[in-house]
Image (cartoon, rainbow, N blue to C red; front, side, top):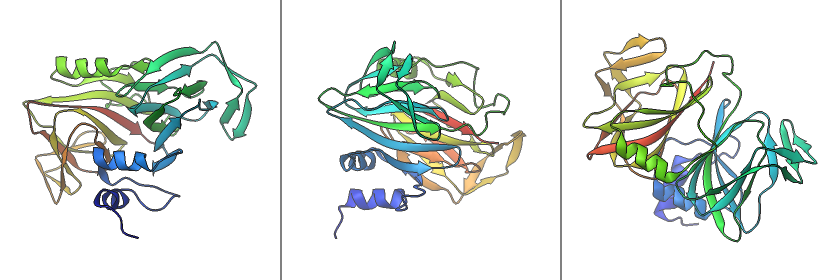
Length: 287
């Protein structure tokens, strides 16, 4: 069978193993679009003990009324519109798998109108349901598991806080446009979410021993240098390694719609290629 070039790229980026799918470094927007075009059901694209990334589609009818006892979820909407119901009480709940519950509906839920570019936060234990109406609704979801619950608050959080259930695309764009430095969005013991904003400066040469970094690029373009060995590396704070350069890095140009995954211990450095680069950073911490 002969594959198109975009499909060959995405097959190289995501492991063919369905048991432990992996993203290596960067998934470009075109690659993600190609993957969604082949997706009619939930698909794991990256799986680790403390977190996972799935591409999910709801089309033509409501999804299940469900509750995940052991996973927080952050939804990054790619395309389409839906009504997302959150909270309340799962009606006629039954445990379909350990920690996973399905119900006949949700009583007293809060309904949110959600569209492309929005971010939805579903804390573990929260009943939820996604109704795309007659259309197709596509989103990437980062699921964070309880590993790391007993950690102290981490340096990756600029300030302890809880993000709202829904952050609209317009709010995200306005924040990136209005600020020139990083801004906090969510702070918890096992994961944090920040706006990372570079204007007129580059990021540090660094590596994190205690967390994974996941970027969702929103504005501008940049050059990401990933992997390799940090030059003159020093541990500035516990678990945080910084230096003045890197040897042997893999270089990518990144832009809106791209996704970057940096594993623990992975050296990285980002330089904006225009006036400003802005992205949402999910840090998942582990013991």
